[in-house]
Image (cartoon, rainbow, N blue to C red; front, top):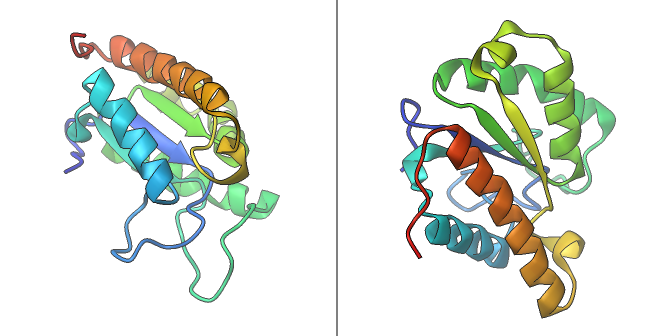
Length: 165
């Protein structure tokens, strides 16, 4: 579904809440996944253009996967750089949640030539699940609109066309 060759945008999540039954990275729960997939569908953001990734890309069975420690966020830097090296066309990261944003900012501070060669841009976005998305329907709609603007801008930077309304 996701393509190493075609990926333009990395969707970076703070954590998953729990491991998916299939062992894949996901938005955190069914409601969060539905929000993200709905947003991507509305924008015309095809799965091969996006790569999901976690700030701390490991799940330890038997351990709660809640708020990440600073050491866990730091540990995610090297794998994120390795991921970007195998995604030759990725030019944007949409960082969902505070830990993802912290990792993305660490990445920018590395001064790695890959960042400036691609003009890599980081977009800060709200987490899609849990308390971060608890609010009235109106507030949730506002948050999704803001998130949609981030993805739309990332698509434009990558030369991807938005779906026609």
